[in-house]
Structures are given as structure tokens and as C-alpha cells.
Length: 124
Image 1 (cartoon, rainbow, N blue to C red):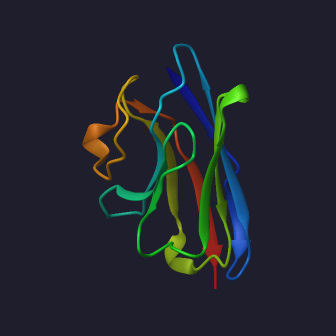
Image 2: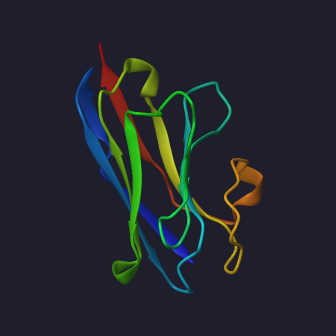
């Protein structure tokens, strides 16, 4: 599975961005997630979603501000980010767990497929 993330950019604090992640190749993963990595910091979990969107999970730092969604017909997962803060500045990566896996996890080590990352910069 190849993942292509897009939608990053520069935005002022309080603004919004929507990230997209298009999948191609093999079957679209049941579990898709977004992670982020700020300079000098480890990659951290942001959000994840299952196939039917009946289950989602968010990092505490983004709850109520970010929304993950997916369009299985177009093999795309989204991350709507509202009320952005300077501390949200990071490279954002989309990721997929192995095909057939149905459990949402927050560890990046349990995701097999990764996109190239898209930079989000939030100015104060």
C-alpha cells in the first residue's frame, strides 16, 4: 500500500486545515491513523479510525479540535484540524495497520504502511 499525504501548510493560531491521505496499491487498511513529529521529538499518535468509522480514537491533546474520517470508495482518509495551536506544528504522517487487522492502536510500531508526511506550521 502506498500512502500520499497532502494538505499541510502555514496557518495562524485558531485557524483550520484539512489533511488528506490517498492510498493506492493493495487493499485499503482497515485501521488508518495519523501521527505527527515535531523537531527533536518522537513521533506521536494523533488519531485513528476503523473501516466503518464506527470507532475512532484521539490523542488527548487534539480531542474536540481534530476529526478523523475516511472515504473508502476513494481510498482516502482525512484529518480535519480546527482551533490550531502553535504546539500542533509538526510533520503529519498518515499510516495504516496491516490488512486484516481490526484493532485500533496508538503505537507507531504497529503501523506498517506510512505516507511521506506533510508539514503543518501554526504561527502565533
